[in-house]
Amino acid sequence: MFQKVLIANRGEIALRIVRACREMDIKTVGVFSDIDRNLIHLRDVDQKVALGGNSPAESYLNIDKILKACHLTKADAVHPGYGFLSENVLFVQKLQENGIAFIGPSVDVLQKMKNKLLAKKIIHDSGVPVVPGSLEVVNTLPEAKKIASEIGFPFMLKACLGGGGRGIRVVENEKNLEEAFNSARREAKMAFGNEEIYIEKILDNARHIEVQILADRFGKTIHLGERECSLQRRRQKILEEAPSPFLNDSLREKICNAAIKAAVALGYSTCGTMEFLTTDDQKFYFMELNARIQVEHPITEMVSGVDILREQIRLASGEPLQLNTNQLNQRGHAIEMRINAEDPFRNFMPTPGVIKTYETPHGPGIRIDSHCYSGYEIPSFYDSLIAKLIVWDTDRIHAIRRSREALHSFIVEGVPTTIPFHLKILQNDDFLRGIFHTRFIEDEIEDI
Image (cartoon, rainbow, N blue to C red; front, side, top):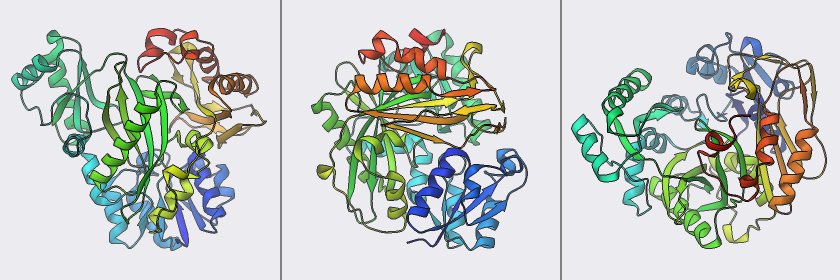
């Protein structure tokens, strides 16, 4: 087991990692930018290292500074959390060269996943269905037109090395194909240094289902069930729940088994998330693998009873997986609401500033993952997430009711938040019936 873990992140996930390490008797190192010197998790770490600067490039994305902090503190492992360097191949290679463990997948897997088209081909060849589209790079406009005639509109042009929503263009019809094709290639070149793109069909009324998997280095892979992640705004998740209200037992088993099959095909280890799209006709398609801890992992923890982050650390240290899927009892229903410092009345504009009052809900089945407090200043340099409100109850309708009450008790004064928007979702009749898809918020709820 690791002796000392450096946490190359900030905010609620850094606090979550510190607490998991302390439970495992692992010492921790916290790194921080200038504006983050008063973050809560830094009170609990064994050592602190200032990175300097405030922008991500100056701090949490600066590989040389992170490596220097590892050497200074003699950390033998790095936990990247999510975002920042969590899926950066160069960073993992540098750690490997310096004899420092990465709490995440291998360089080989990350290189496969870096090229989303390559990963899609590997999954396709394993027998797992993938979203219809191209399995080769689309280099010319005539090639794009040919594929369009085969799969039909609408579809997306996506950068092979894409991420963060960049290098993506939606093509509704042939009129905007040429402009979108050229624009996607330009953005891909600027953002990722590679202009290669591919085509992926947009599935009508699709649902975004993801499966949490755990895998060790000895060939054992299990799943912890699925999460429903269809409630998104501009491809950014807003509210997630587990289990999905859409899946029946047969489809659930097929998707979860496909997730394991895909992980094995990629040679994946530690924790990860296989993402799928499902359609009204009960078909499902692999979309991508998130090779890190997910923001929404707590809802799976709540229904499975498994500490995913602790398992991630264990597996990264080389320990064998001791859990079996058939031994896990999924119980109840969990919902996670991302409380962001954004103004839903002003097109979700980020609202950095000082939180004057911060009071969180309490009671049975309520969990708050947050680094904020009264007097905390939300910086403008990073993600707007200030808290994750996770609610569990015996079934979906009771979890929704408990979520409403928890939101009413969640008081944040000084900055606008997305709390009113979550309340609107939880009162929507179609949401209550479990009838929604990935465009549901844009189509039904966005006009708050």
